[in-house]
Image (cartoon, rainbow, N blue to C red; front, side, top):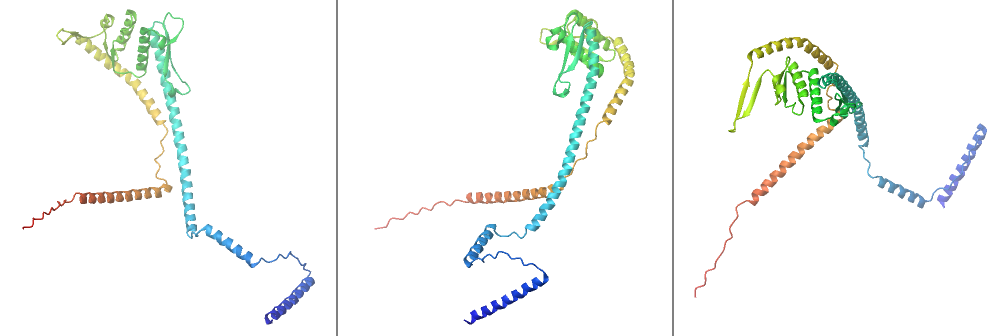
Length: 354
């Protein structure tokens, strides 16, 4: 009863204070905002709410107090990876540009060389075929390195041109020799070896080949294996090899010393005349080399990968130690298995004497 009276006294005191506050608000011109007074939850509802929140906390699990430090480390690593990504992306673009420049330069170089060789081929084939026509062309002009090189020819007396596969054996030989001479006119060689290149040719075409080799022998040495008399008649020296009938070869040699000396002097004069031409070609090669794009310097290990590489080295060392330990354990077990084997002791009881 005493407690109830105390509560009534406090309630009346609170109501009096509330009236004073309301009167003060009216005097000050403050409007009283009345909100819907919702009933307070019961104790049972409060307990259920507490249990629900406790279950949520249990579902979340233990709190990782190092999450803040880990988040900072991840942000730092992300920044490092982003920086390395920018560097590698730029280097990749540099390499792509370099590859494109090299591809363009080799295409230009191939086109230039092919153009000069094609001019030589037209001239040489016209001479060998006595007025015929021929030309070299790329199978894929847009992408020269994706296709091959082909040719068409129209020998004298034929109305239509055809590719190499459509020519006869002798015509193919003439076209092939014209291509060889055309390439050598662009980049001469001091030594040539022909092995029966006139085998499929008639006498007239064989003479044309022999005369062309003879004319070019002033600046280069030609060795030709042949059975054609027209080719032998234009040669300076002859080396004949015949079968003796006893399984041994016989050599017959015809050597003209004076002619050899004269050819040597003529070769020296021709070499001196070609020196200027070779110097010009060397200058072109140097200029082409100087025009080559510079290769970028090698890129060091990105900073973002240094930690991974260090951990990889540590892992390798740990694996090596574990492997050595396992091998030592196996060796010890093998040694135990191979230890001395004790022979079983057989005891024999002596018979009792009666």
